[in-house]
Amino acid sequence: MNPLGTLDELPRDYVEELTRANLVPLWPSMRALLPPQAPRSATLPAHWRWTAIRPLLLRAGELTPMEKAERRVLVLANPGRGLDNLQASAAIYLGMQLVLPGETAPSHRHTPNAARVVVEGEGAVTLVDGESCAMEPGDLILTPTGQWHEHRHVGRVPVIWLDVLDLPLMVYLDVSYAVEGTSQTAQAPAYSYAAGGLAPVAHGRRAQGPYPLLRYEWRRTREALQALASSTEPGTPVQVAYVNPETGGDCLNTLAFAALLLRPGEEVVIPRDSAARVFHAVEGDGEAQVNDTAIAFEHADTFCAPGLATVRLANRSSRAPLYLVSADESPLQRKLGVYEQR
Ligand code: GTQ
Image 1 (tube, rainbow, N blue to C red):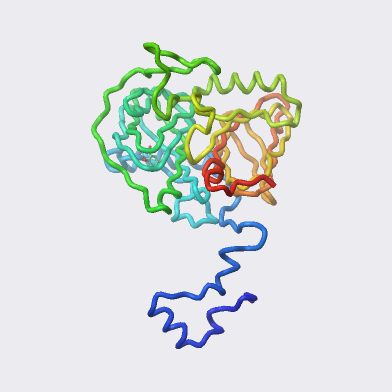
Image 2: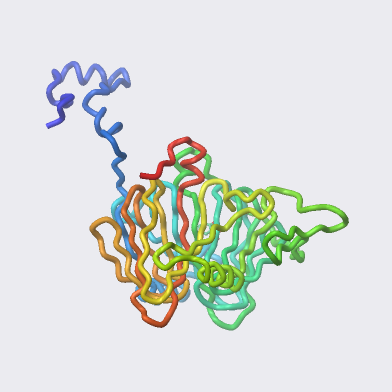
């Protein structure tokens, strides 16, 4: 029973009169909107298996041509939020996208920010405002808000990647839309960050524009994690953040991206915070404990933890390292002043 009363307790004619005037009493909804001490989240710990996604996505390749689909994507939807809402969490959308050899996903731009983590295949490029970003497994490629992007594939095998967008947020704010474009002319990157701490200078000038780095090569991310591991105590997460190399801030405005290494046999606890978080296994297998839910995940699986969840990750292999990429809502929450660690 709601201590602040229910609509049923009110005289029917009174409720009808309110409804006719587009008015609603607050008190029956007060506790749901402002629950005590902690938010209530519809986001459930959820697990999407690569072995389930891959054959269904390849089948979509047979069923639906690119001309019809525009983006051939299976959305990883959180059942707690309702599958039809296409949300992994309140602000995060996840999709697994397939491009077949010879296909192009046509150029468009949209208000939502996007990033891709390449899962399988080679020979595809994403053009971002003309900049050609090669797509190799594990690479993180940004297509920030408003930037033109198209995906071309001249390789021989299907290429598949995980799309991470802040689409639910943009839809909620009534600012989500796309503009269709014409095929881009590919240019080599004007500035290229080949090593941390060294900013490229061209014609005496540093990089211009808010997104100086669009492709974070997995090879380099992996090397950075390995180097960090040698100076990190066992049980302390070996983690790097994907940052904007000019500002040191988050690589996108709304979502933060990180890569983690769990050494053979290692178990770590992720600091408990208010940001919902998704994880994707780039290399290796492991176990996650998200609140009361145990998730045994394998290579290329994706899983999700609601904000304020207790998250433990374990690499049960005695020989192979486990590499994960994560995305979370912390930049957005920080900007709103609601981010907290508990
Ligand atoms: O590749 O541009 O999964 O626009 C959803 C919307 C991918 C894309 C998605 C998109 C894209």
